[in-house]
Length: 480
Ligand code: NDP
Image (cartoon, rainbow, N blue to C red; front, side):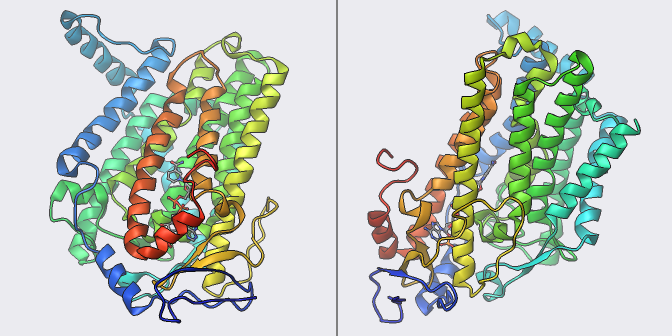
């Protein structure tokens, strides 16, 4: 087996090699690599349309969330709009009335949402977990941070707690979906509060990095890279414990509502319970792989990530559940073969998503000298590529060109997107709004992919070009 190190040979030209699972050389940034990392940790240009673009998003996101919920809840899932200029004012007043009455941040919503946040924080702080070393952080002089990965025990503890609260009637899960609007508003307030609070806290402590100097832009992009409370990495905690937990409980709440109303749960609602559980469980059982993702090692904890975790994901991704909870099952009933096709599509996409993420993360762990992996349920086949092919870069890092990563540069994005599409397909053509997630997500993924490839091309230079020649397609092998 060969482990050719292009950098060590003094060659900037990448070579394809295979790595010994046990004895593989660690990723060590070269002098050149360190200089590039330094450049990447400086603000050099605005993204997302600069201060104007991010302000529009900070105002526009909450408005869009209210609008889509109103259409779904009050207008039979149809897109409503004023038909003439004269109708604009009454239309806006009507919209405001819906928000004022049915989405006010009432005491109940504060108790439910804030209760969950504090409970999740307490669990994360106290429950034992699996210790995982993160990637070397250039801005910390290549120090690695330790992550206490206890999401799995926290998620299952939360599920047991919720079941007890429901059966003892202390807190009926059905109430979550009935109070969607109120809880969504509280979630948004939390999103804004934490974003601004985090910005000031980081700046006061002098821990900010990659700052532009423009206040609103820096609040949007964030100031802190690795904010922590004790052993709890807030960015990683918020990515798993809030959005996907809420999505799952919204689906369970919708199922409880159907059961109370009709005495049964439709296959469509059961599909959403399964889909949200799969996603939540994937994040929790593979939490030790999250420090290897771009959100953790590069993205800062600003409004973009915080608002989306606290409010955006939980209150825009499961619109199909909201629709089903408020409409008769006859509106979204399919034939048995259609249900089989839908479930098979979800499970196949999930499998590719899970195994491809695992292949890359475990490859990166191997490159750090880690060869003992965590065993959580379910470990899908082909999660680890034995003796994988890779490209050694002059930077010092290796790029995987094996497993799913031999066929496309973002197999995980494609599989993830297919899952998001099924979350809309589950109600067929009854309403266009549940497709918001997949439409929004494809835009995010394409934009994110562009940003990521740009960063990689700066980081790896000619080696990235070589990698793109070896792995030609971005998302779908043979097509794009
Ligand atoms: P990736 O997991 O693709 O990570 C990108 C980074 O991985 C690159 O910057 C590069 O970092 C490294 N990399 C890329 N290709 C290779 C390779 N062949 N070999 C080794 N390293 C490589 O993307 P993300 O972190 O953006 O996404 C992770 C998952 O999260 C995706 O499945 C995505 O769909 C999901 N996601 C879901 C969202 C949602 O709302 N549902 C939102 C955002 C993401 P370097 O070389 O510098 O180490």
